Length: 315
Image (cartoon, rainbow, N blue to C red; front, side, top):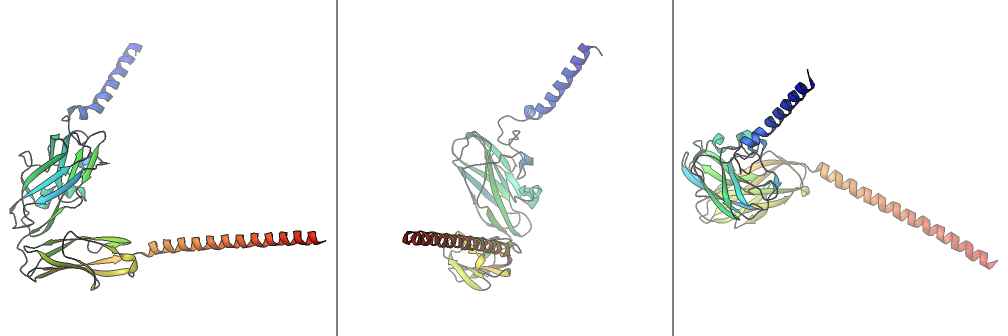
């Protein structure tokens, strides 16, 4: 092959590589805040691996028109966003679970999206007019299977980097008939059967038509703390309890005297934590003893030297 032919072939190969590399970004919708600019669509929690990830300082809150709904019944979910680094473009999604990712789209959990903020039926929506505050509404139908369900919110935006943030707490729903015996208590953290250590975050959602008189946290039947107002969250210091299986109970009593509770089992495992702490204490103690020993040796040597000087001066 002549040199010109080789140069032409090499040029074609290079151009093909460039086109294949740039095609996805050239074909993607411009302005999207997910990598590749997906714009309004149904998106899993990880956006197919293209979500922004830099921590955003934006504040995210969620509100629902009701948290008790009949199977298949209608409700609204509103996501409020304020602050952050976003300029103009803001993407917001609602998901039913964060992990496993394939099950994160609400429709997988049985939800029906009647309308998103743009009038379509997607779980992910972008606005190009964000200026520091936004409120987005989804109109949904609840799953037809009774039980407890939770929805979360995630945002993505630009502004010098690819930012993202999750709502600190989702919204928990009771689908089905409400309890006639008392408040419905849902322990959202820790998960039942989980293994915990150190300081454990205990979180509960209370569903009731009446106000709460008090809500009690118990471990193995012993009261740890109680609250009269939400949020019903506690920090449990697990290191003061023996390792092994324990019963965690959250009991709610409303102003009408009706009682509801949920009880779960957890396994406390602080052996490694305590072993590490004990090793550190022993190391510090050994170090202290070694230092004191060296100080003692130096003092004896100093006294011996002083004694020799004194004896030498008396001769």
